[in-house]
Structure formats: structure tokens, C-alpha cells
Image (tube, rainbow, N blue to C red; front, side, top):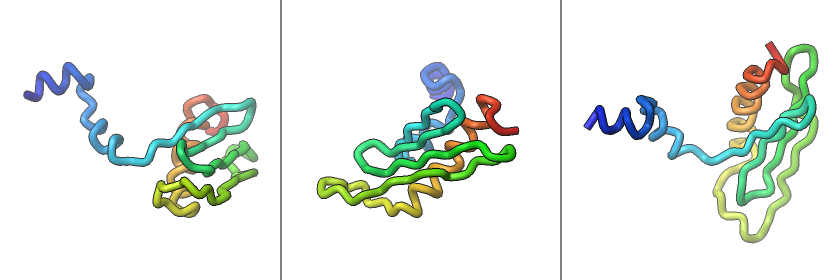
Length: 94
């Protein structure tokens, strides 16, 4: 089974833990990183400032059909590491 698993997932067993995490979209817009959660109004924009990311804008208006069960604080706690990783990957911060 291990060989079949490695063939399907390229040996990366972290896929299972990823499937349990909320889905975030991380986009680069110029010198900004935008993180959003599909199905919600949660959005945060990070800008590079002195080799660090700083949250410059966020939105989280309550949408009646929103059923993610996640607080804004929890979203921001997930968004920053995702944005930080993307910023390091593209060389926006060191």
C-alpha cells in the first residue's frame, strides 16, 4: 500500500492533514499578498514593510449564508502563515 500511496501522492503524506484544514486562496498583487477564504467574506491584504508582512486591509462582513463556523481571529491566524510563506517563496521578504 505504501508504494501505491507514494505513486498517487508523490510520497507527500502531508496531503491528509491538508485536507482537514480550511481552504485559503493566496494571491500576489504587485507588492501585496491577498488571502481569502472561499465561501466567506474573509479577506486580508498584507504589504511588505521593512522585510516583514503587515496587514494593511481586511474585511469580514457577516453574510447570512455564511456557514464556515470560523471566527475572524481564527481566519487571521491561518492567513498570516500562508501569506508569510508565499512572500518568502517569491522573495518579497527574506
